[in-house]
Length: 434
Ligand SMILES: [Zn+2]
Image 1 (cartoon, helix red, strand yellow):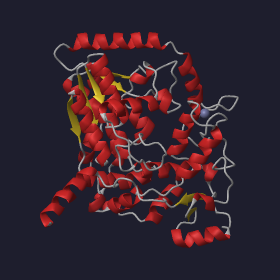
Image 2 (image 1 turned 60 degrees about the vertical axis):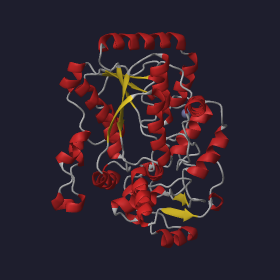
Image 3 (image 1 turned 135 degrees about the vertical axis):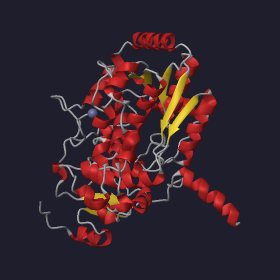
Image 4 (image 1 turned 90 degrees about the vertical axis):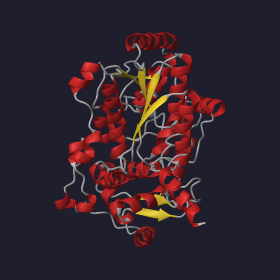
């Protein structure tokens, strides 16, 4: 599709940026658009800031999105009855487990991980096996939070970490394959806890936040109890491991990915899951979930730490990873919104922000070029122009031919956006030199 003739300011940016479809501006104040909705021509939920380009979004006849409807349902739910239902599920699991672990708690090191471990070990007396799929992109803060949560609650833990080279290769192929950098993480968080469930014969998996909260795919009125082992493939990974195979003849030996490399990302067979009786619940479907309060609680009582997270004004979401900024920039380039749209919308529903205040925060954060992009380009061997071009191809039709502004980040990120294991290695070696 031919682009409209660029305005003068865009032509200048084209030269500097190397891309015909975005502008690298120095400050949000330079934007031509007045404050308000980031893209005037898009339809947004009338209550929050979710645009029509969000995957799977459904507006009702009044123009209200599913997440806003869920937020309303949440107030009217009989949470006491839900809590009793949770207790029954947990008691049953304990009774069946005998000397085995009572449940698996998939944890990432995020604030939900600490909260889940607290609730399940301290309030319900469960003996869980904590399971972590490492994206191998831990921030220093995230690593601390993960280790701290295990120490605080004395929980046994299993972690799987894909090798560095494979992570780098998959990060490159992922942009072209699914339009974000994180296929290995989407697939691994779905597959690894299930593999552990099958191998250790532990049927119950307990996740944190309700799906009703995090996407429009479910509502509180029908919590997802029915277990779907391919849920993560459908929702976030998009491609199965066999679809991520990249032959050396086509991609070169350095970027080849084999079936063998991808074996850890396969979910167990349906028969295996059935034999063990694997099922999963989300604590947020049974306990009133309040991100802000829970963050304060784990911070003040258990030493959980926040950090600056690129792409958002919230300091507690995805704090465990160095790459969320790249993930969210990709979404912004394809769909015209990033993580701060999502976070600001949550705050609007909770009554913490007005819709106008939310749009202001969104304009300030969604469009910033993340520092994590430098690391991403380094590990994938892609140029910035290649990165932007790959995402332009995947742009939603509503945004074709539109200028998507990108701003420079005002100040360096608070913590280094290099995977923590690599930081430790560097630091120890520097000692040798000194
Ligand atoms: Zn909404």
